[in-house]
Length: 272
Image 1: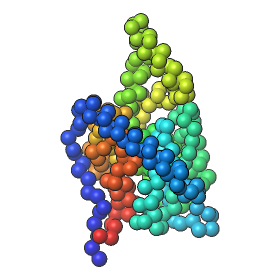
Image 2 (image 1 turned 60 degrees about the vertical axis):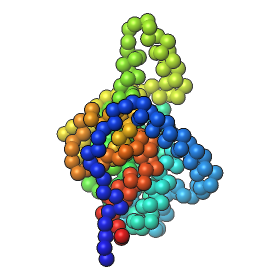
Image 3 (image 1 turned 30 degrees about the vertical axis):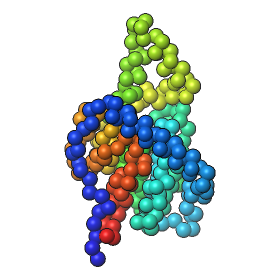
Image 4 (image 1 turned 90 degrees about the horizontal axis):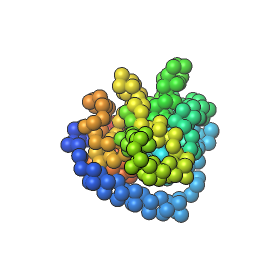
C-alpha cells in the first residue's frame, strides 16, 4: 500500500514584515473563528469533550491546551482528524481560568497530567500560544522528577521566546513621560477588566531557554503572526522539528496544513 504524509511543509518561507498584512490576517481569522465558535456552541454536544471512560482507554493520548482567551472549541477540527487517522489515540481537553499566573497554570496542568494520563504509554500535548508554554513548563517540572519519559509537546504559535505584543505593552507601561499616561491608564483598565496583567507580564520574557527549546518540542509557527512578531526576529533553532505555515496566530487553529502536520507527527504514514 502506498503511503505519504498529509502535508509536507516549507520550512523556510519568506517572513512577512508588513504589520498591516499580519493585522488583517489576524483580524480576519478572529472574525472567522468567532462565527465558527458560536456555531459549534449551538450544534456540538458537550459529550464531544468528555474524557474517555477508564474501561476503554487506549495506549496513546493527546491533550489539547488553549491559549489566552481561548477555549476547547478551538480544537474540534484537530480531534476530528486525529480520530479519523489515529483511532488508537484518546483525546483530552484541559481547561483553565485566564486570570492565573503562568506558574499557577503550569503547576495545575502538571497535576492534571499525573492524575489523568499517567497510565498511557505515550501522551502528546498540543498547546496553542500560551497553552504551549504551560505544557512546556509542566514537562520541565516533570522531567526534573524523572516523570516525563512518555510525554511529548507540539506548540502552535507559542511565544517560546516571548511575545512581541506583550513586550510592547510592558514597554508602554514603564514609560515615564506624561504623554504616555492616557495610553497607560487605558491599558491598565483593560488588564484590570480582563484580569490579565500578570499574564502579559509573564509573556514578555524569554520563556524557554535556547539550549532546551527542542527537548520535547515540535514547533508549528504562523508566518503572519502579530502576537509573537516577525519570525526572522525569533531565535528558534533551525531544524526539521519546525514548520512554518502562511497563516495568522489564531489561524493555526483551523489551518488544514497545521492540523495535517499534527496528524503526521502522531502517525507519520497515512494511507494515500
